[in-house]
Image (cartoon, rainbow, N blue to C red; front, side):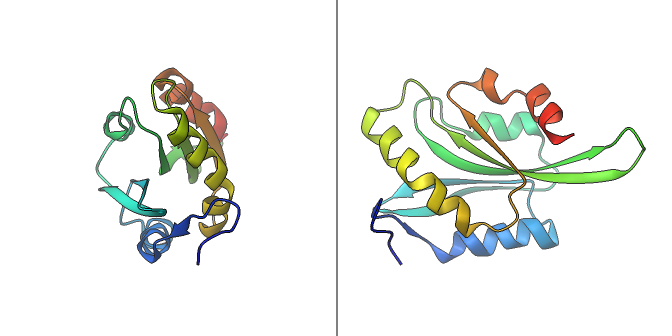
Length: 137
C-alpha cells in the first residue's frame, strides 16, 4: 500500500524480518533500502555480528534505514536489549536520495512496531558505539 505523501510502499519482507529480529532474535541488524519506489531488505546481520560490522555495512555515500538490536547489562546487572532505528543519510549522498529517505522515514518507521530509540546520522561519528550505549540507558 503506497503512501500518498511519499509514494513509497513497504515490502512485506521488511515487516516479517523485523518481527523475527524482535521476537525470535534471529538477526542482530537489518539494513533497508529504497528501490523502485518501495522499501526492501538489503542485508540481514546474524546474531553473532558486532556493531562495528553493522556500521561497516552501511554504504559511505548512499542513504539507508537500519534497525539494530543492542544487548547490554544495566547498572543493576540486568540483561536488556533495545531496538534502534537508524536513519543513515550521509552528507555525500545525492540530494534527491536524502529527500526521498527523509520524506518516507516516519511512514516506514510506523510499519516497524517495537522501535525504542531513533538515531539520525549523517556520518559515522553520529552513530558511534558510545552514542548507542548512552542512548540505550
